[in-house]
Length: 396
Ligand code: PMT
Image (cartoon, rainbow, N blue to C red):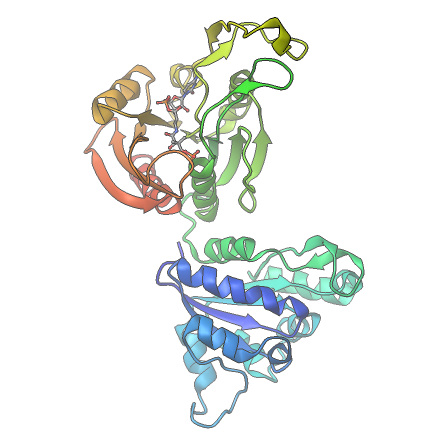
């Protein structure tokens, strides 16, 4: 995670510099220590005072400003854990790829031992020019992480690739760049969100799951180096960077997707709130109200977690969730045993700040062997990192 990480944020001179104001806010909210450095051209797009106010620190622009000492660049470079350049213009990309150090930001790139993230943003023709592409290939070959620009309408009026991704996406890329890759080489299958069980073509029954818990787990696992397949019921969420998203609608489809992707998975986490019942008959046409209130009959949906538990290989680690409103630990222990799980995460969904559709959760982690851990209220991302810490201890 980004908590207490030293992030040196290099802003170069493109119109997308305005998006970095929001990125600074998000980085600080994530607990990072942010130092902004701007090129002289960037300072023409956004007033440095804006960044100084948001980061509560002076912004550095020139190499030799009076009062900061001649070795400012070394001091800044040494302190940083991450140098994130966003937006990165063709000019700054060209300089750093070729070892030119003629201003503070390009000099910092040469001087720092920190991880480097570059977020290109420019006109589509400039971005696609072989000179820029060669420079990016060159940077990637040196271990620099490059966040691909988005496609769409550009500030210059052209359509195409070159838009700076949204601040939330850059934040995720910063996290990925600094987090230790302790799950590298592992494949995760994670489920998230609700399922929708159709009554007729326009109506369904579902539940209050937003998908936030499963998406946060996917982001944390990807940040820690795993390959992640996220099987998700209907949600409004964006898949985390680099995560393969498989969309499903109902329990039956989730079952099929899990059967397919679980074969290659080393770790399976079932955070989805799968419907336990589905209407026995799904009407082919919209049920007309003139016919009076219908009486619905239900059948059980497949117990996906139980199935995965019964087919679990010795080299697989299976994690379930238990959404309870009473006897949290007792009910979770029962599910842990009955479904042959290695770990279960129990949450009392009746508690404020826990469970469905909030950004936080209050969880108890029960491993098959070992001590039960009672956690305080955490963000779903913080909880995800804790769950992964537990998994890595039990499944090295
Ligand atoms: O999505 P959010 O808004 O962020 O909310 C998060 C959450 C509350 C959904 C999440 O933290 C959570 O508790 N997920 C599990 C919800 C649930 O279905 O719990 P359960 O106790 O009913 O089921 C136990 C386990 O069996 C779960 O891992 C569930 O995915 C699985 N299950 C349930 C039914 C079914 N037919 N097949 C299953 O695999």
